[in-house]
Length: 212
Image (cartoon, rainbow, N blue to C red):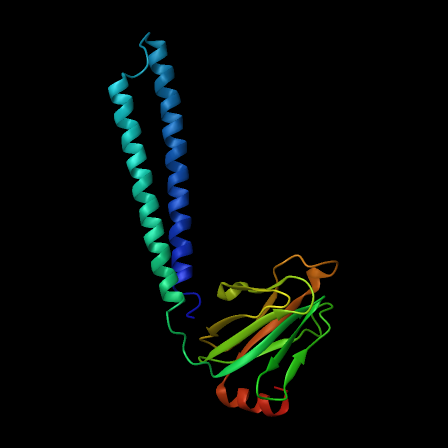
């Protein structure tokens, strides 16, 4: 899943379109009110039905064309971010959310990472190899949670009794704060965790020792 690529471009495109449409609507409304006031001052009546119908048809046609464009561009971006065949993951991580923290178990290894999720001092860390696909198998031990990595435009719900999977690739080394994005109880606001991408050699060492 190539994060910050197609989705980011689509988000920027849709934001620009939304602002353009908003400004055009405000401009047209303002112009219509001004023109109606001007015609009223001159004792003229409303526009003839033929002219009004043409304007309405043109406006409707523009809306339909814009809707078609947005649907096509959305499906195209979704196909790029979610290809039909996901790459073979270098590692699978079982992610479990619980009130109110996280647990990450690296399948096939003895490594399990967790923390206290109270403040930002002892948060669990999800360590992944940079540039390699990693499959996240996400579930919940109690109520509905959601894994949210805002820097990478990634969100996946954690359902109790169900495993949701997604394969992701982090393209550069770094460390980013992430959190639960689903209101899940009293201490929901403390359900933070770190996502850390490290070089392959460092990741291999982590799988042996459980420490970076």
